[in-house]
Image (cartoon, rainbow, N blue to C red; front, top):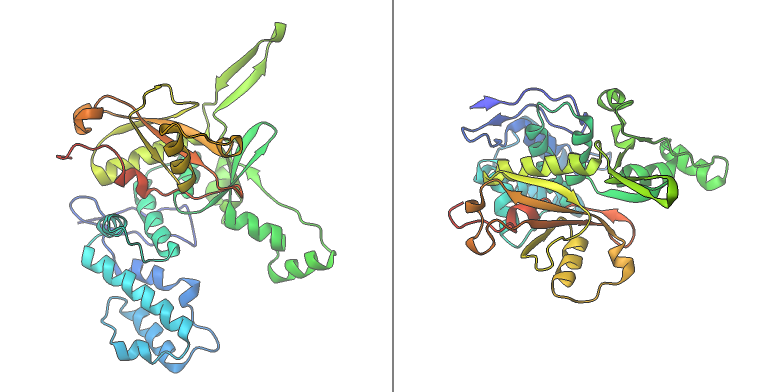
Length: 358
């Protein structure tokens, strides 16, 4: 059993270095359980009753200890009681599964996900933090955030930009000044000012050091156009595209869980008129690709929500189902109608055409 090295990104929302088993999967340590217990929904407040205080403090000391039904029933506030019940259900599931990976797979394969997204996101974040332990590519780390933090997609000056949805909402509501900022904005005494930067090589060092790194936008533009003479336009692939960084993260995600090596590349369209397999990385792209596959009409407004397509190819075609071996798998990425994007990384684990022996 080994431990992951200390990671310096995602401060304040990350977890302490975690132990791994022989397979390299993460063990649900007491420190990780304390990280889940530190959720705002479980924080003690002035109105917390003695039973809740005793339960919380005892779990901080021994987060894996058995909790009697009577202890939970003694918590007077109904919402708090339900929040602790959810925490205990997640905790017990993690301990029973033995690793974060096994718990995540079991939960997603069950078809009945009864755990709030905040806990699932915490598990995904811990997994990605371990996977990217040695990564020093700020664009790749920022792209990984898309797997556990919803994004808001905008177009600006020909570029497609992804911003952290919660951060953008907070800045729009409070100008980054908390409740005081909200009051000033509502009174008209303060004009909203969004302090954001597009992540680039020039400010990557600041990204690593900045505790407010969720204010960095990720450029998802795949191609840029350059006007030439005689009315010609040259299209060039951007070497530093956030889509390429996202593809690298997804490759590691698949290899870690499924043990198969794939190559993922951004694409503009489905090249194969008779494509055989596709996977949506979110709810919207799944629906769009399903409609296109079935030759159902897709409105222009829905098509415009597609942020990108990707091609996924297996390094070893024998690891695919025999009827699609050697064929590319098309992936989709799309926003909701309100411009938000929530990636479902489990889709890549559940829906790839794997051979039965893999």
